[in-house]
Image 1 (cartoon, rainbow, N blue to C red):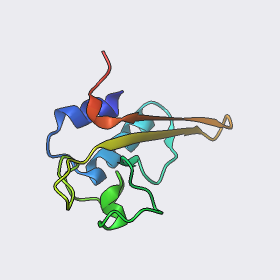
Image 2: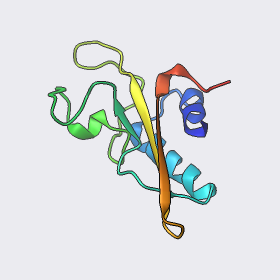
Image 3: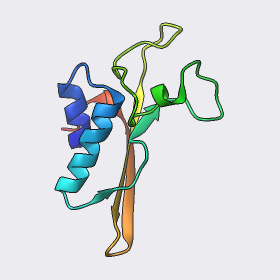
Image 4: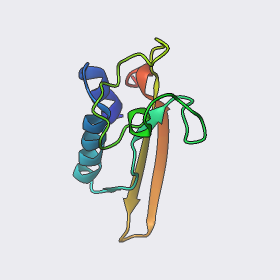
Length: 106
């Protein structure tokens, strides 16, 4: 996946930068990006208390922290990449998610 490859090649990438890149990849391929986020911390969801502001737990606009970091407990952050693609004209879309830090597929 191109977004996963970009993550692997950009050591200091922030959540906002990866979100923007993922949206650009969707546009270049003729799709609309349909998500308000492009991923999240593994295990961190709205109903859990992560000890971080919500935007910092998302691959989304406003997340200006590097994705490669540790949390407040010193635990390395692992991310899920979520890609939502929409073709409004034809009335369908698709969704895929993968563990981001595993690296690009061969």
